[in-house]
Image 1: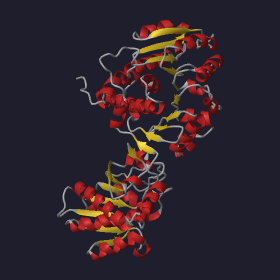
Image 2 (image 1 turned 90 degrees about the horizontal axis):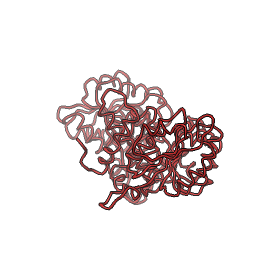
Image 3 (image 1 turned 30 degrees about the vertical axis):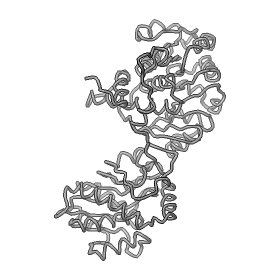
Image 4 (image 1 turned 90 degrees about the vertical axis):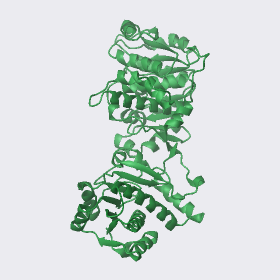
Amino acid sequence: MIPILTPSESAALDRESAARGITPLELMENAGRGVADAAAALARGRYGRRAVVVCGKGNNGGDGLVAARLLTRWGLGVTAVLLAAPGEFRGAAADNLDRFTAAGGRWRRYSAARLERELGRAEVAVDAIFGTGFRGAPEGDHAAAIEALNGSPVPVVSVDIPSGVDGESGAVRGAAVRASATVTFGALKPGLVFHPGAGLTGLITLVDIGFPEDLVRSDLHLIERADIAAMLPRRDPETHKRSTGVVLVVAGSRSMTGAAVLVARAATRAGAGLVTLAVPEGVLPVVQGAITEAIFLPLPETSAGTASETSWPALREGLESAGALAIGPGMTTDPSTVALIRRLVAGSPVPFVLDADGLNAFAGAGADLAARDSDAVITPHAGEFGRLTGLKTNEIMDDRVGHARKAAGEFGLTVLLKGSRTVIAEPHGRAVVNPTGGPFLATAGTGDVLTGTIAAMLAGGLRPADAAAAGAYVHGLAGRLAAEENPGGPIVAPDVVAHLPHALAAVQEEELPS
């Protein structure tokens, strides 16, 4: 897993490293070298090439000045364009402006015409305007410089984060650099991971600049393929269907039979050895005709064709042989159905994943989720999360990690907050970010596929946070594989289901079917 440090944590890392004797000048020198390497690569050479480095007055600008000095030494023609007067630079940034000047470096104060002229003859540009501590919207010359970089065909290397992106959240509230590459230091930053900022970074390179390894501490990480591979169980020769996991799916209604089918199919494709699909008795013939590999449990239904509260005894018996439970997709908010869902949540003896109408059953009463007998994963999107917590969507988006962590702690369960990118938070505060997925999953039913995938992981013995992380990663990868198979065209939820085995094989580095 790759650590993700907030701007305040990054500042603390700088201070703690200084206390170990690692000076800001040393860190800046190493950071600038990483930026210079990336810039030289984008310039496709050194001698005879030209670079323009656009510098703010902070440490980010200091990193850029180190890069400018090194690029000059390597034979490039470099101009540093300063967005502040030399006397406004402080600390290590001021020292590196002096070193650049003493080495014969060429710098000019910013003007729109000057930057346009330098960009017109450069092979590469370096964005060293703002760092990860930036908030709000750029103004004046800073905004104009960002727009000039974006308006030029010259590839841009951003220092630590594209200027204009909020390092804490990835928010973009004004002009922001669209980088070809971003060189970041020590750890990832939230602004590089969460959209829309993540969409502006280009290729990210994480550079070790000398921070002591034991000081790079975080309870937020980006999950990687190897992490998921280590979680997934492998089937031994003596495996049988019940040992690989039994899932009970409670889903669907007269008007939404497809949701039930998608959850059950996904659970099977994601590795469950046996799936029991519990649906209102009136829709049983429909779902039996759509899925052949499940067994079925008809439930007493309401006049609206939804599962009735009187279904509890049959479900309680079904849970005796299950390893995990999936609840909610397509069930509606009929009062009797809501009562059934709440009873299932309170009384399930096995871990469960709760989604869609399962979450809506707790609208305005999210705290009631804490009253349960088993482990659980909830999988809300921002709207559902808002109904559980009373928060507005913009409040949630401003701090998705913080709100997911708070809800996980208050509800005593794992929260998978969907979005770009998905956050998985545990009750004790640890959180991970899933890098797979994308706009190709923005189609009806893919959330139901995720529910079934996580349920299969729970039934396979994974702890809730690992089941959520593995399920999200495999689900997102399956979506990408489906999209690659249908370039230029939309995909639908069954395409994602069909690619779950391919995604599992890719994670485990098995040979993919041709």
